[in-house]
Length: 140
Image (cartoon, rainbow, N blue to C red; front, side):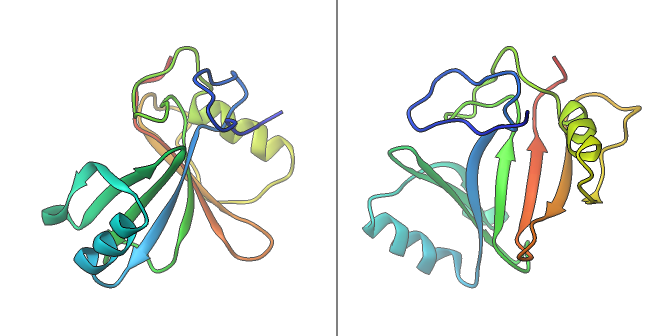
């Protein structure tokens, strides 16, 4: 079974699809950053010069992306904990892809099964919300 990581969890089960965040498509990065900082979020990664920032508030992580996406995206990062540190063990994105396809889910973007390391896949939920499973670390 593919699952999520619970709030406050430091260990990720082998069947997890990864650390969760919401990637927001923003019109003005500086305005959005100021807004979320007023809500208590702090920048932990990203660069304004590259049109993206990653912010956290407690167990919540959001990414602000200007000019990169057309709509907001639910994002999962296999192999990363909440601080973007490598986890061991973790389910590789290719393993996750095989599980999703075995369940009959349609993927809009698939990972090349002959590769290893960083890769991503995209699927869309029944309401049209895109889900990005984006692995940034080498295959376990």
